[in-house]
Length: 257
Length: 367
Figure 1 (cartoon, one colour):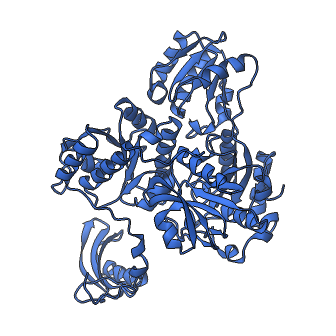
Figure 2: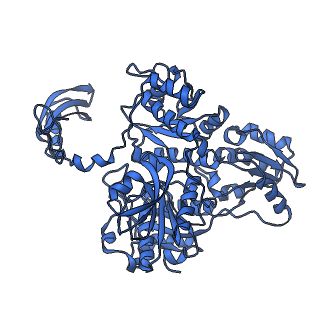
Figure 3: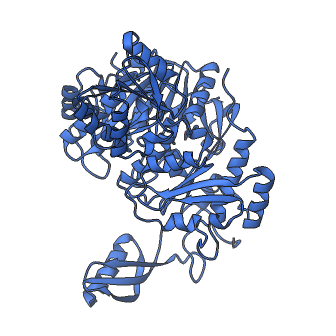
């Protein structure tokens, strides 16, 4: 971190500290034209950007225009007040994970994953589980210490849970695109509730992932962890192996009385 | 019996469950807490989700009510949130329960303050911390739910339920009323009897291992279904199974029962004309998506539970944040016509008897 940053008033940085410069891109459903360019500038100004500037725009398809813009953000955030909330964990590398499992678990870890309900996107789950992975980090399928079952997309929660029971899974991974509509959230909570209803909650690690999923949302949904954009398979794997090792060592809430 | 505090006076572990996000569950919690504070009662609070955060986790525009507690009250929340609250406290127990927001601690507050609450997420862990708080001096424990999660209302976890509903369920008032009435019916699934053939069925159901399902006939002979059959069977396989067994009298489920399976039963029960009673451990084990309990009753399938939920009251939030709102009195009146035998409150409305206990800063917070 640069030394002269005012952590009580942090704003975006481009050319020099505190300049507030932001690059953004978006599409407007209007034909490619000078009027479209004006509309983009006006929109950026309304959002609150000062000195908005269109640096690139082009026709996306007939009737739609794509923009890349710069603007100066005048808002700032008090980062100093947020630092106490660090929930960061240190991630292990693939090799470290393999060694850790060998030592602390002593068998393959079984993970079942799917995009549930009506969600047709399986990109997230594929990136985490499939051998190919993404950005050069292969998925859990490529680890010696993991056995993976990727059920794909649009999987009912009952089918996902059934598979987890069938293969005696240690963890269930669900990916969902959470929107401000309630539907996807209900899909995520239903799985947790079904796991509870089957009496399997203490035996299953539940993780969810998706573009808007945070640890805070994961907690409300009842999951043990939440993963968002920027998560690599070894991040997910680090969480699963540590949590499983902790559970296997009998580290649970003591029974009352 | 005009306030949440009075209605739940005999309920050591009270669950608050919402039918969706933004049904005003946390507002109901803060109202109950101020009533208890006014009465000088020591309370313990835990949440299966997260409570007392300043903004909604999905829609940042929505401000949430803060949770205020008094010196002597007990909380189950994470180490991180307890520290961040700045409220002086004494840690009574480290629970070893890990959540995405840190490890859950059980603590006694040594001064008043507002605090974010995130207790254990799992039902069994929730019950254990609730019992810990009761043993450590809480007169009662409030277990707050999250989003639409119902598991905390299971009689295995709590002794009574306050359900929160609101305008968020639909833009049409009648739709809100119907969906609420269906949820109330589900929560109030009647208990299986204690005598006669009910007693025989009860004995078999109570003896099933978790996740096991069995069919039983009039004579009480039971047949366990294949593992996971209820979770995955297709309608044709379900019909075939019932036919083979000569239209059994009971289906006893010691796990989750998804709507898909019930729908599979309907055709065969209609064809055979022989009534079937489906018995679940408690109402939280039944997962209905777009049907109500009555639909199955009409088809000849009676739903019963071994352990019923004690539903104490319904709270109503007439406002759907960033969307529409209804007249509070009109919504409550229409709900009362549909659900005549249940106290219905809007704790924000001047008509609510507990409103006098509300602290001034809570009045201003939005739903």
